[in-house]
Length: 388
Image (cartoon, rainbow, N blue to C red; front, side, top):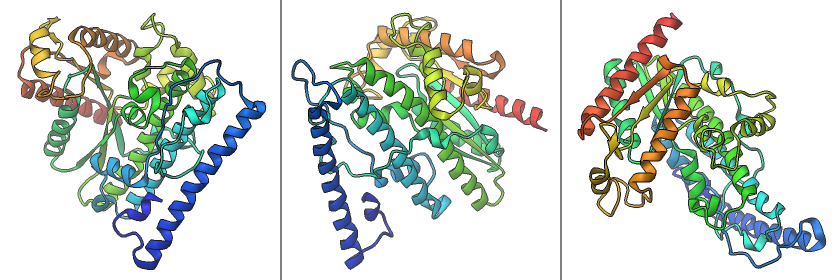
């Protein structure tokens, strides 16, 4: 329904019909919630022993999905009619994940009214999830992928923008560069894991969250690869696309056992769950790593400087109202610890020659990002030579 509000969608009587359709779907959502509540009361799921706090979920509208694509450099100007089609598919797979994660709470006893779909949370109301978009990286031979990771305040956002500029310039315009957004942030914004606070924690929800975040990562990359191919066809002189993935399908390895012994989910179990959804039995870590032809760029958090805890620098640059991210909650100690966990997970997963690990040797962010871009450019030369 929100797609009716996109530029170029129906106006006048047709627009009114579109808006009425949105209202009808909204009423249907409410009716479905009531039916689901009656099903639970009838015994389809056990009632919780004590009242639970309300945990609202939202859906991703087609309009918001279109903005995600545009922010990732897949605009309507660059890919034409594909833009709306990709936006509709993107919102559909995200909403399927939201519904399934929400289902996990109902299955362990939460009543539907305790995990409501928030009013006006309109979006494509499908159940086809990210698993249906699984494709081998070889399905897009002109599209290369680079994973970008790092702890809080590592410079990932700035790094992606700088990389796009450098790669386009150094390739004389032959390379088009696109940015795949961070999946976990989107899920948190829509209500998953209590909007990312992890308050009122349920292990069932966390397992569903981890599984569907992995599936969405693969789906996002597929959708961006399709868009990148469309952009290549529409751009004279361009012959290669590079996807910069804000984290990747290996990311959850850092937040599962055995890398982090305090976690409740095991990495092999998560791989098995993801593979089962995809219809790829025996899915391995190596299968995921092979998707990123350009390897991984690991940016060190500013909580570390010259190998030591950088408390003063981190607190002045990375937290607070005037920081690079005013809503960041990680302390310098947490960020320091996260950095070590990430490095351990990725150095185990990726071949040594596929890793660009950029550390902080000083506080000049421009020098750091330039070093990152040059390392990635060397990776491109290496992959180009092997593909020739």
